[in-house]
Image (cartoon, rainbow, N blue to C red; front, top):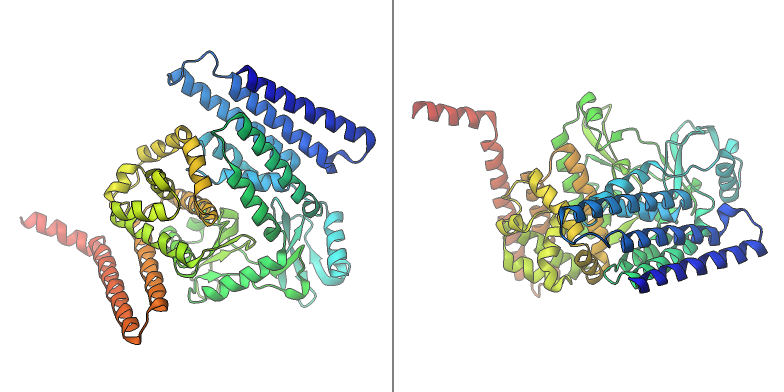
Length: 518
């Protein structure tokens, strides 16, 4: 213990000394100085580490007092982390939001505290917005737009969105990057990497290097709004057969790496049940369509929108057709799944749905989980091991099971950390996406519905058949695969019809009548 405390104090002293020397020699705006941001982050890390090192000295491990105290330490550490993200903004808020989305991977005290970062994002001033537009588009704001709302429609960690009207009368959404984010992001990632390594040095069980690797890989992509525009067009074309999905069209003549101009889309957030009730939107239809979209992206195409938090998924009634629509926004972060990985992932989910435990073990191991495959199955599905054994499609989710999963997230944090460092990098964003979608389903009260498993199975069957056809040596073999696919899809449709009939009013009336006659 003394050795660890010495490490913390040495680290803090070195940071303070270097920070003071730097500030003495370069009197600049403090909020823009990387050394100040580093000092702030290092101080918060040192305080959190010291708290974990000293809080449990006089408490017996495993007692009720121990678990109560541990929850308190988690809570205040999460609050310090949240305050750090709000102070340093930019990349720190983005990383904090990522952690806040991992409901079934991190202790509840962290995820619930960090979720507020979605509403704590900074706002750039109107002068800063005008400066970015002037630099990137070469014109004054008034030369491009008839009107431009000063209050943003939404502000995120990297950018904010304004509603505007073009000179031809079209209403658009203009996403403008915060001017300092581009310059600070690479330095902030270095700071986070240094501190994660320092914490791992103090606490060997803490191995969250996967978080740094993801930030290094994804941040440059998210800061390139031209890349986001291309992603939006690709997914709109890829899922064009879904009439309910709307992706705002991009205005390329008014878009750059720091500015993205697109059609303006109205709608309520996907987790706003009151909005849906007010506008006559069917909650189950929204949940089912969201599942169809993501199953198609993950299993069939391997091109996955990885930030489906409620602010990026809007719902609305089309004013002309009165059909329910889903508007998908923010296309900066996509994961491209390699074919072999995608096939193993398909087979794993099919095994999980059917309760095929040998398949669960085989494909979990192939995806890098090793001996931690039971934990991997629970993390992936957010279900208990008992539910996984029975087949997740046949066991409803209960509140007690949810509490068990969240409790285990705290108990098995070192093992979860080890697991996340083992699995392929492609898996990490999928786990985040799963948790965000699960959060939406929980709010809509549609979790683990039979329709979601049927849609998932349908996409898995199609994806595996397509993959096998691409490897087939002859036309006859391809025909056999297509026939087998058609039979499997037909069986699913018959099962779906059976479920619909068994749940219909006519079926309930017939059941009651038979019971009465009996």
